[in-house]
Amino acid sequence: MADTLAARTGWALRSWWLVAGMWTRSIMSYRVSFVLMLLANTAVTFLDFVVLMLMFRHTDRLGGWSLPEIGFLYGTSTGALGVANLLVGSIDGLGDRIRVGTLDTVLIRPAPALAQLCAERFSLRRVGRLAQAAAVLAWSLTALPVHWTPGRVLMVPLLLLCGSVIFGAIFVGGATLQFWWGEAKELQNSLTYGGATLLHYPPTVFAKELVAATVFGVPLAFVNWLPALYVLDKPDPLGLPEAFRFAAPLAAALAATAAGLLWRAGLRAYRGTGN
Amino acid sequence: MAAKLRLRPPEPGTAGLYLAVARGAFRRYSTYRAATLAGAVTNTAFGFILASTFLALWRARPGLGGYDTTQAVTYIWVSQALLVTVAVWGGGFQDDVQERFRSGDIAVDLYRPVDFQGWWLASDLGRAGFHLLSRGALPVLAGALAFDIRLPTSVTVWAVFLLSVLLAVVVSFGLRFLVALTGFWLHDSEGVRAVMLVVAMFFSGMLLPITLFPGALGELAAVLPWSALVQIPTDLFLEHRTGGAVLGALGFQLGWALALLAAGRGLQLLATRKVVVQGG
Image (tube, rainbow over all chains, first blue to last red; front, top):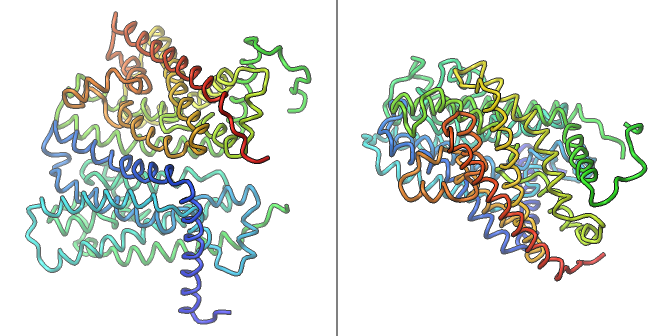
């Protein structure tokens, strides 16, 4: 058995990889469906940006932000959500497993439960969201009239990494609630998919209370709003100290820790349904 | 609820049977109270986000698309109420049928002394009724408390709206029935369903009113069946279409509903001729 932290992490990643590989082979046996779903997934997630483009046919500023600036928000928000959804998004099926009683099967296997559940029903079609987000982000980076300093250039990959961790933590933390409230599956959609939609638009569009809740409550603002203020050199609608613009790594670390603790508490509280 | 079980089933082919199926579906969905509440909260969260973005757009361009700012915000809340009710995302009876394709039970369904299409239509109408009362009413209520929205004051407008929602559910059923039946040929209609979802989200007016679409795209969207799902009922709710246009809108929905049901009937006939039962 693995003892050290490094060995345990390695084993968790390997478990994830094995389960994800198994699902990939399984899904590939319906090849027509897979191709259609990959295309549909790319298109349906891209529709949100089509709507933004259509909106900008009628105006050239939304909340004081231009289309390339909003493209930057869109690309980073969707990209971070896409990575998190690909790697851990399947965890939202937890409630169903508890209800049907198959969580017990997962728990008795000699592999970390979290890694197995995150890889469950893994599907490469989720790459669709990621691909279109990358395309929009690439376009916005070329269209933005930003003076690129080394700090700003570095901030883009950093915010994508931290944003993915934050969304991943929300996926895991939200799913953990299903240990207590099995039917809450859809509730976390407000924070994950709803959160990503919120971050497509500039913070100036929303009520200040809502923006404050994403800074001091669920740390969505650190995914792209606050770092984008630095990259795009925009004023902060809340007037927060400038340090907040660079605090994404701290927010990501806190969110991941909170999700991890919540997961442990949930797993301890779990009692099998007895079948 | 054992006391409510009826041992003698209603006579097949009568309206009573379909009413019983619809009532059964209504009650089945109403069992999952927590899930329904969680779903309504999600619709409300999206309503808040999207209503704010519409407010920003209409502040920049007042009167855009012929809607005033209050109507634009109301548009978001009504469309959120319709999203699950008319199953723009797909689902409802479609999930059941897809599961029955996977398990092979679909072969049994075709032997039943009940019309296959009628059975599932009744079941989907029962589901829609429950979703309208729960996932429809709750977000609109929340929207009315938090935003300045426009609720119809006349009973006639409410009646026209409800009739339009009923027709929207039938049109949506007609489309989803065609998608579900592709399972007879593809064994798995998941992919077709995913493609359909893209088309439905865009052309129903769910994401943006069709009147904001540019030129030919807008004209195309207005004649496709998907506009019957969200755009038309919402416009009737907002009294964006009045007078003769109301009858035109309802007639458009009815026309598509009948055409799609007929197409579904034809495809069903084709499908039953080639059922292959996979394994046992």
